[in-house]
Image 1 (tube, rainbow, N blue to C red):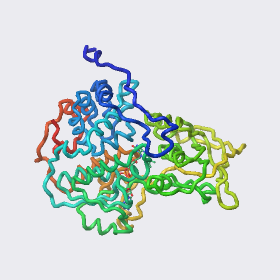
Image 2: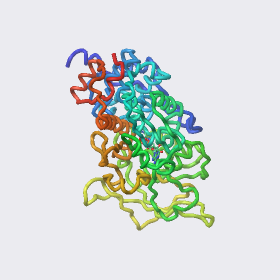
Image 3: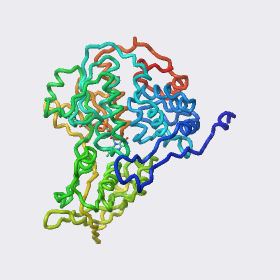
Image 4: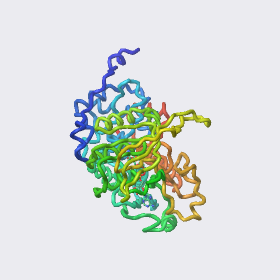
Length: 491
Ligand SMILES: Cc1cc2nc3c(=O)[nH]c(=O)nc-3n(C[C@H](O)[C@H](O)[C@H](O)COP(=O)(O)OP(=O)(O)OC[C@H]3O[C@@H](n4cnc5c(N)ncnc54)[C@H](O)[C@@H]3O)c2cc1C
């Protein structure tokens, strides 16, 4: 082993500070994680050996060793520039990314990539002066983006740098989709969303809020008037289980519950809350219920702890740890039979069975099968179903929709974000299986390439900038496809 490597090996992660659970559950403003200081960040970043295995875990193939090692050298501007080549939301990512990159790290205590990204983003109030955009003149081409989630805004941001006129149609009054109305503010502060929304907007992107395509403007008008259309519509329609008693008072789908909480609306609810589900939407619903004053919160999931969505991963472990330390109770292998109501329609509790996990004859995961001999009951007055969501495509007229190829509930796209219909591109939760923020960004980057090619915008003639040496090596090793080198002044 080379001497330098032995010298740099450092197995111990610099600990990150967290607020005390009993303090943070008092409101939505107290962040769970407090960021690194400059000294801590540089110390943590210096653990990175530059092997690049992390890049394979990142759907957007960010140049992680490039920006982490720049932090270790104290070159924060350079680090930010490297991140912004493929990701216009460094601080959002630094707060909520599922950080699968860290699962690939060779250390058993992985380099804290997500916290480091947050640190570097926090050093700058505005990124624009740092990156010195070399924005191209208008091409005269117009692209409509339906949905202002991370997929849509990645497309809007990078296309606008290429001189494309981008208009974002958004049904909600606020930008950034599920990041704003799904993820609670204790994990992602409103100020962070505002900062990075402004960054995209200031690149010249136009926004039309409270504009639901299919209601406030027909899809056909957009399709006819724009040179290309990107669908970044996410999965905004919640699946309800249909359990008897679901029509009782204080029964919600998690998407509605979280949206109301995030928009500051009053939510009629009781003090004993059951969440049905086991993914990050379930955890966020449980923790939101606590912050809204619930005294007892149970998460009821039909499988075992190790079968919950996105497990095993450091993200799933951290999320569970934080939720448990806040006082939420998890009950595994549960099948609700009925949401029991009183004579006024208020929920009194849940009748349920416990499940056995049995091999599925079709293969795959063990299947939960209720043991119906014994019934149980838990007293609750509020039920939140975090049982999945699907895209709502009803805004697309049937003559167009019939040609849109789907796989189950997902729109099929190719490696350039093209759907089966010419001119229509798509990405994000409506198209991918991973359904997380960084996958939506990765999809957006792919669609940028597809749309530029479709619009015949020649980007080969544009100024190429020299990347850090390490980045070039990474690109060679992993076939990394950088979309926006041309525009960012990376030294
Ligand atoms: C509770 C919760 C917690 C999560 N936590 C995490 C996390 O910690 N880490 C992580 O990586 N991911 C997390 N995710 C997932 C992440 O939020 C999504 O993967 C990501 O937001 C998907 O981005 P998107 O661009 O596909 O669309 P979305 O963010 O879903 O946004 C879609 C947008 O399209 C708009 N839209 C839809 N139809 C129309 C129409 N007809 N007209 C106009 N506008 C329309 C919607 O209003 C919405 O704003 C979480 C999701 C939820 C629900």
